[in-house]
Every structure is written in C-alpha cells, then in structure tokens.
Length: 428
Ligand code: EPZ
Image (cartoon, rainbow, N blue to C red; front, side):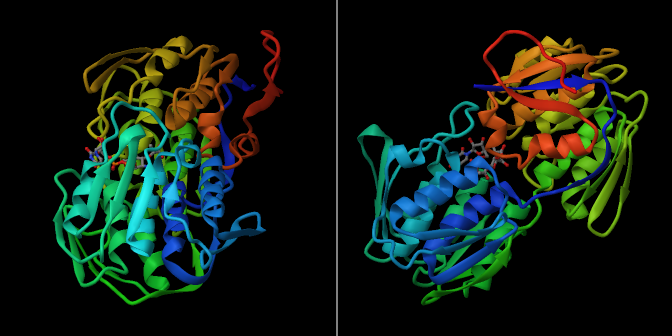
C-alpha cells in the first residue's frame, strides 16, 4: 500500500499543463475495434484506466503498442472475440463501451458488468434501450453478463429518457457501421462526446450534431485507420483551477479549451477568485477570503458532477453557508465523511450538502473513496496546515496523470511513500 504525505498551507503557484481527457480516450480506445487498419492516438494520458482498457483490447486480440509516452498505436484487425469477461472489465466502469463497439464490429457482444467508481446504482437501461431499438436482442444472463446480438444492426430514432454520457457514446459506437440512419435525441453534450464523434469521423464515419440536442449518424460500409489527438481533460483542468482558488494561489493552467471551463470559471469568480482566459490557457488567482455560494451539478454545459467534490472542498473555507446539490448521481457524497476529518463542517441531506464555512482546515489522515473524492482529499490536504496522509491512492491513479509531479511543480510539498508505519513523516 502507498500513501501520500502532504504538508499543506502553501498557495499553489506556477504553471501546469493539462493531459488528454480520460473520459474521451476511454471511449476512443474501444472505438478502434470498429476500424480496419492502424489507429495512432496521440495525447493519451498515462493513467490506470487507459492501461486497463488497452489490456482489455490486447486480450481481445488487438495489437496495442506504446509509441511514446503519450502516443498509442492500435490495430484491431485480428480481433476475433466478442466476449469481455468479468476479469477483464472488473476494474473499469467505462468498459461498457465494449458493448457498443463489439456490437458494431460483430453484431454480437457478450460483456460482463463492470467495476469503477461506486456511487450508488449505475444502471445501463438507456444503453440497452438504444441497442434494442437498433434491432439487438438483449439477454441479461446470470452473473451479470449481457448477451447482445443482432442479425444486422439497423439505424433507429432513439430518445433517451435520461441524459447519459455512456449511452450516447455507446449508441454512436453501435450506429457508425449500422444499416441506415440513427438519430439520437436528448443526448449528452459533454466535450468527450464530441471528441469520440470527431475521432470516428476522422476514420470515415458520418456523425453530425455531436455536442448539440440531436446527433445524426449515417451508417457507413467501413472505417479506415488514421491519426487522432485526444482533447485536453476539462475535469483535470477544473481540478487545478479549483485547487488554485482554494489555496489562494496563482496558477496558469495550460493546454485547455477555455470554453469547456465556463461553469467552473464563473463559479470561481462568484466566490471571489480571479480568472483570466487566454486562447488555450486559463490563469486563476485565489482570494484571501472566499464568499459562500450555491452549486448544482448538471449535464454539460452545467457545473460538472466530476468537480462537485472539489467545489464542496473549496467552499468548506468560505465565509458563510454554502449549498452543493448533486443532480446527476444518486449518491456522490461518500467522500464528505473523510473530508470532515480535516475540520470542515459539512452535512449531507439527500442530494444536498450544507457547508458551514470554517476559517481553516487542519491536517488529517483520510482515504480516497473514489476518483474525484480522492482528488478532494488531496485538495483538502493542500489547504490544511500541517502534514496530512492520504490513503487508497488507486482511485486517483485511475484518472490523474502524474498528479504528485504536477502538484510539486506548483510548489506543493507532496510525496508518495510506502505505507508500512503509522508515523507521520514530513513531506518536504
Ligand atoms: C460518465 O459516466 C463519466 N465516466 C463520469 O465520470 C461522469 O460522472 C458521468 O459521465 C456524468 O458526467 C466516463 O465517461 C467514463 P451517465 P457515465 O451515463 O457515462 C443515470 C469520473 O469521475 N443513467 O452520464 O456512467 C446514471 O445513474 C467519472 O471521471 C441511467 O439512469 O454516466 C446517472 O445518474 C465518474 N440509465 C446519470 O444517468 C442509464 O442507462 C448520468 O450517468 C445510464 C445512466
């Protein structure tokens, strides 16, 4: 086991460069199953979720080569299995994209139900509804396997009852090689939806409207290989922006698309921080005292649920009472009990956290409960005076590339150590 030692209380200062988007690349890598030929994917973040999805493709028979630290070459020509077992998918929620990708490739997919962050029930009914409308027979087998098959996938008009990132990407994957036109109404509009569509289009697909209220996919004969670069990760960018504001720091966040950050930018300004936008960078400066605020998570372009734990942590030191409402997931406040170890005063009632701002957080020992909850623990430790210890790092390793290194470059006193004693070491 490893832990992070963080000696907090110092403002973050300097520049950080944002990596490729996790939630885009873990849709793009399975999408290569639909392509005949080699795909060169650039700006791939070195995170555990990417390792997991590349391993799954390799086990299915793909050739997956790391060309350099952020470029991967994938050739799925020799894939001949449409079965993803529990052992393959258990580490990653987004392995549900194998359903759409394998269906698109073979008209058949046998996929076990995945692992990933646990925030209550994570249904896939909208994914299955879309597949069914495209002519897929869905058998829900014992041990949580879905057995999906069709003689031929056919285009359909699909209305999602719930805005779902996963269902939108999954139906796009199933539809690009289907017979006819698929129309998705009420799709998710997150930047990674647009990025997966752009990747597929650059390989010969015909998808229009990704990022708008209606996506239209005209099935094509086949996709060809090519080179594609993944967009920057707006959740990683938001993480550093909120950390800069919370530590009263001054941070230039480079290699981002400022438009993707609008909900975060406006919230930081609302609580008293300064945000300056450049073409592909954003500068954030904190404030001595932050004002309280209300935050409600919503599908894009609303405030991202994936930054909710960091927004709550930021507001824990505001000068009054704040409210954070989680409107995307049923249960995404497990991290609050851990956060309160740092002296924050947060109570959760249903979908809303009430945050009584405190003067300062103090050092604590706490564990990551999930990926973004884990980032919130790191943020709390950076805000707190004294040395904190953060455990269960596998969660943050799933989604943040070179987290400690990037934070160290911003002046954080942070180090990862083996956890074989209970002593608190100085993290200098
Ligand atoms: C994606 O999850 C992201 N993961 C999540 O980020 C993110 O929190 C979420 O979208 C919302 O933005 C990936 O992209 C890999 P959804 P996904 O389907 O696709 C309900 C992170 O921290 N729903 O948009 O699984 C569902 O229960 C991760 O990086 C149904 O009811 O999310 C939830 O309440 C964690 N039926 C809401 O919709 C369905 O069939 C949104 O889920 C599908 C979803």
